[in-house]
Length: 474
Picture 1: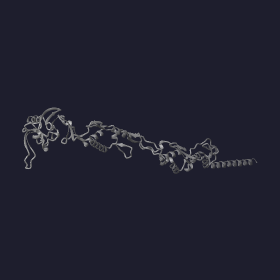
Picture 2 (picture 1 turned 180 degrees about the vertical axis):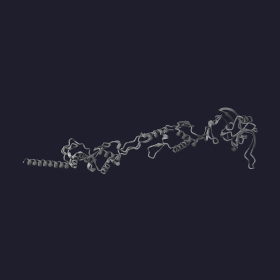
Picture 3 (picture 1 turned 90 degrees about the vertical axis):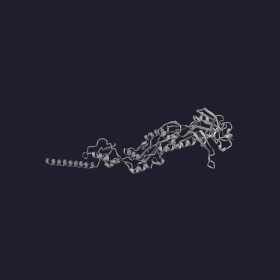
């Protein structure tokens, strides 16, 4: 009886242990696929849930993406338009893998924080972004580059102007990075996302070129001209001589163009200021102020365009400000022509005056061209002694037989215009008065021997000879 009771007890114990083993094994199998009791993720109880069920419990519906653009503009994109959502699967799987199904009977303690992975359709997102008005060139303002300008003869920098045109690549990168961080409201109101001006006002190239040109524009060339006036090439003029790049952002100095401008300026100055005097005013010893022709001697000013072009070009390339006279091909004033001395032949009064340095050195009577024959008149005008000769035979033009119309021997010969000259005339019995009207020369200025000798030895080639008194032959 006692043995029977022990046997019954063993059977009960074996049954209980078998049941418990089955329950344990069933639990191990169950929790191999389910979360343990007490499981809690992101403050959400997930006991006994499969990972898939747990993920659904954690999911929160995404509503929209909010974007802030420059100029206080805001756009919203519904989450559904690019399939925006959160993926907890990796975190739940990792959490599940850390649990021990064989210890399923020991509940989990604490809360697990899992950061979900943001998921979305990248192509759809890009399409939505590109469709926003703030991303369209037509509805945004393009940036403006800084550039160089000329103002009142000075090179200045006009600063760049920021636009509202967005850099689509940078915007897309910024939005995707923010979404991946879990952000749903993104601020794009920053120059980092704009298409920036390509040329900024602090650009080294722009600053240096501006400084270089201002150094050039600070050059001034002032011309003092014969008539007392002046002409100045200043910054306003020089600024018009600069070239501009094709993109319109830079001015620069082109040597070839500068040479052309210098030539054009020299030509213009010559056109405006060149002058040749056909007649000159002369203060006669006895006739007062008279106007006489000056065709035989060139008086006036003529700028040497080629030489002035080179001089001006060098001044400007050397940045040399200066005050100077133009380069003249010739510059000759009648007063300067007379300053060292001259001979005046007065046809009316039949006088010769020889001045040296503004002082009367010698005067005498003379006989000029015959009054009654126009071909023998002494020509009025401005001349100079061509050369001097001693013991010269003077011959007139040949007649129809080839015989000279006259032949005279003179001791002192001082020609001043073709065959006209000053010389001694020993055949003349007197000089001065009205003798020229009846015993005039063939156009030369006849002098007595002593006067001719005196003048000859004190005169030189190049000495001016001024013949006045045309009215003597009227």
